[in-house]
Length: 401
Image 1 (cartoon, rainbow, N blue to C red):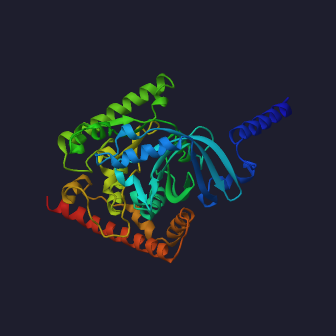
Image 2: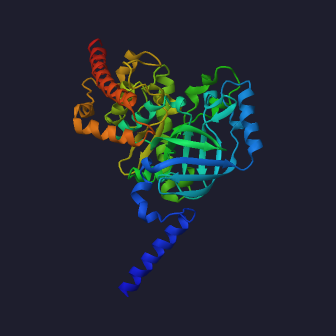
Image 3: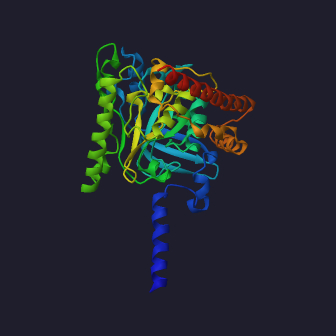
């Protein structure tokens, strides 16, 4: 009896696996490790079904009078997507659409149209991601985004898988930054139980017709992104409603009491240091853009009854001295406890830790060279220096009060 059960499980596993990757020309179980390593991904080929409408949509975005990309122009297009690995390829059906808020996500160079894309696979996955983004590299400060993502992940923060990949879009080849979406697959990869994921609600900002799109930022609040999880049952409904209420209260407290600051939002209680650590390292990496309320993403951990920040859109500048893009830094530094110290900064002085970061960075860029090695060294040095300066500023802020 036991033997029959084992045989049944093995047969079920392999038949279901074949079904999932039936469109691949290789035996996936032989390449399980390599399928999760971006080093082995050579390119992504996307062929849009209705090309004329796809390019019409591109030029509608280019000639529109609005400075940002209207949500109405982010139309879905059915496409065939081929993933080219060093050991074979997989072919999937996908929906793609225009990505990005601003028009830096669409470009014309030598008569060719380049654009950032949001991709939703109808079957299969790429490095376990079913939904992902393909950015024009400059829209995310290119290597800053890739290295910054590696660093944040090594420090223990929830960070989407991010790497450089060649995109072939209707026979036009160009480099893009692949970044997975924050879905249940993202949580699984980070060994987190599936639960509510929230983000700043930008619908009011981008639908507002006035010239100043950010006039309504203080009342935009947050929204649930994985709404299907809410529908799973009574328990998930209770978890979502409880956490949503708590997060909305945090957004309202921010807009009522700290509208000129980009740090002072505490979805957990003040004694929880996790958000202070996150805000500290983001500031040290010149990533204050990620701290804007409408850019923030959160995972609610029902086991700990705490929110955890998810990295998104930091606009990082790693190899630069400490600066602050929005607001007055001295006001924001009151957010930190009097004796706050970011203990993880000592890791950057550890040779093994730096080697791990460098190894992961090399795996996620297409052509690592001397220029990128210098960028890596300068970035690590500046993060340490910026952290030291930031600690000093925090101490001075509390001493002057």
